[in-house]
Image (cartoon, rainbow, N blue to C red; front, top):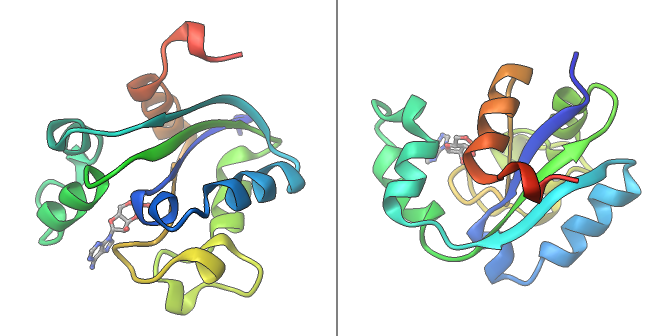
Length: 138
Ligand code: CMP
């Protein structure tokens, strides 16, 4: 199990001004921030990032939303980082997210669900490399 994962504070959460609160919770839950920046993805950037979902019916909606405004990308360190970050995020659908999770507090729908997290160590490494250069990781 790796100690690194990748996260995004999505455009809905940044638009609502919740990125500061989310970063505070990231730190309060024992994650170290190894990389962080505010970016505004183009549609092509989002399509590249979510290429594994290209065949899904919601791909257009997802990539348009992810390129609709600024988001915060994060490289996070903690023991068992991938499951630890997924636990803090909560279920993809906020209606199913547990009390105390980020999606319970900040997400509004399955599409606009405030945060993203890698689903495996392998994808965490790919996703960190998609957004961060070596110089941007401390
Ligand atoms: P994320 O963890 O960023 O990875 C894929 C995203 O697709 C997921 O979060 C959801 O926000 C989004 N997604 C999943 N199912 C749907 C759906 N039915 N409609 C719109 N977006 C979805």
